[in-house]
Image 1 (cartoon, rainbow, N blue to C red):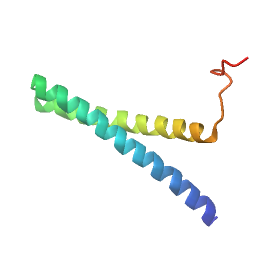
Image 2 (image 1 turned 30 degrees about the vertical axis):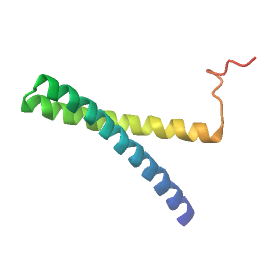
Image 3 (image 1 turned 90 degrees about the horizontal axis):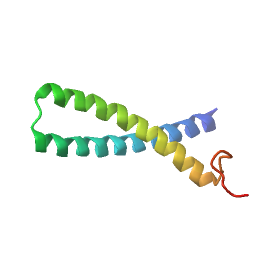
Image 4 (image 1 turned 120 degrees about the vertical axis):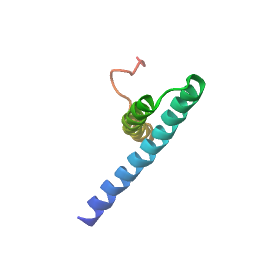
Length: 82
């Protein structure tokens, strides 16, 4: 029981770390664009919501890619070796 909780906690921690990195990356990209154009506060709020959503999505996708890379498994759809 404790082993499974530790394993799940480790996975959630890695997803959270990747999500935070994704959030920061998206927020920096949006900030650069907003500084250049000069958006109002409503667009800043929408940019924050989008950063949270995209950051979470990037975190989950990065975690899945990382675990797939570490396990060296190939997906049959993308395997081009014959």
